[in-house]
Amino acid sequence: MSGLEIPLSFALIAGAGLYYATTKHVEGCKIKVIYTEEEEEDNKQSLNAGSIIRNHCPSLSDPAQAYMVPTPYLCSGMLQTVYGTTLAKKHDSTSNVKYEREARTMSDGGTISMDWYPSRPSDQDDAIKQRPIFVFLPGLGGSSHEYHIRSTAKKLSSSLESVGPCTVVVMNHRGSARTPLTSPRLYNAYDTTDYADIVQYVSECFPEAPLVGVGFSLGANLLTKYLGEQGPKTPLIAAAAICCPFDTEIAGREMDKPGFLNDRVFQPNLMATLKRALKRNIDVFKKKYSDSEFDAIMRVKRMSHFDNLVTCKEYGHADCWDYYRASSSTTYVDNITIPFLAINTEDDPVTPFRGVPVKKFQNNPNLALVQVKHGGHLGLFTGLLRPSIWYLQPVAEFLGAVLSIKKE
Image 1 (cartoon, rainbow, N blue to C red):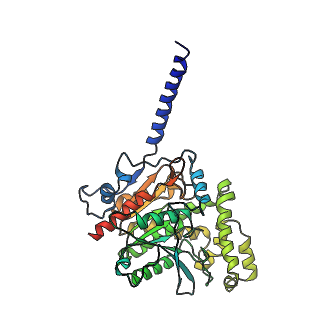
Image 2: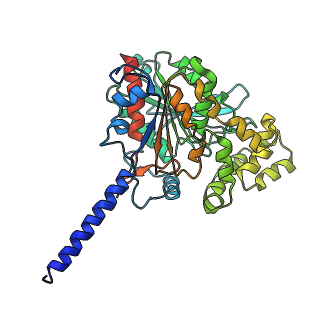
Image 3: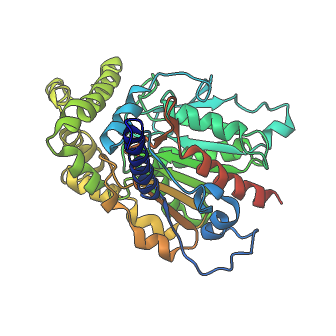
């Protein structure tokens, strides 16, 4: 064998090994979609979640497309999650949105800010008033300015070919996104009344517009709980929940564990966001809490301690674990009556997959669960040089299909 043939042989062997390893990796990135399988596949007008996915969602049902291959250098749930948090303020072609803000005063005097994209529908334009409206609900410490929120808003507002242009409105939680805190009451994982009031308000303002709910993390839990509470009374016609914890006690205990990600990233960021909101609105908050109570709140370093001092006092829970159990949306999943798509990852370090009520998705024909092997929490980045958010396409396909079927 010549000197040239030896390196060539090694190259061929290495190439074959790389191809085999890559193929095995990609095969391991197949997504799993869980839903009831009672209906015939050829009913393209059915609003059962399984039928919608089989007939209208190639990114979830086509064997050649139903993969979520993570960005190679974001190969773990932790890396995906941390990468997502570092993009909070990044603006690129997929996320460069500019909102129009509306402030809404709630019944208790609290304030909710609503960020509209591309703008709040005009009262003078009947065609725009009839466009579908997506009502977003961010997660804990999140707002309309998060990268994943902006990217999803841009995708859904302009990329639903069978539906046409749509409107997005993001409901910022009390005290978030520089919303003034005009009531001592803060947002939490238990109380869905703010979202219910905003959905009802949007429905009354634009009675001819189809409404769709989209929630992220804690916002997904609130959306899911709201849908179960409302049942057929909800004005929403479809919904998507991204990285929903479902069982907030499991998620709460996971977040409370000592560890690098919790101690250095999640807990400090969450507490810093909450404390900034309290400091900006100290006069309002001190109407309900004494100086010593306020000082104790400002000293806490973990979300569970904050909930013990604030949220449990507000709603009468014995402790944070009692509050987390009461906040879990998993017990409300059975009562959802509209097409509902949930996307969760197996390596989510914030909302563990073991909290997802998989069997409930097999028993309610309105539900579909997308189980993704890799992606972390609110990450799901794919691609090499310019990672993009994978779930934008399946969410657009699913919700767009519902809107299109309803339109017909």
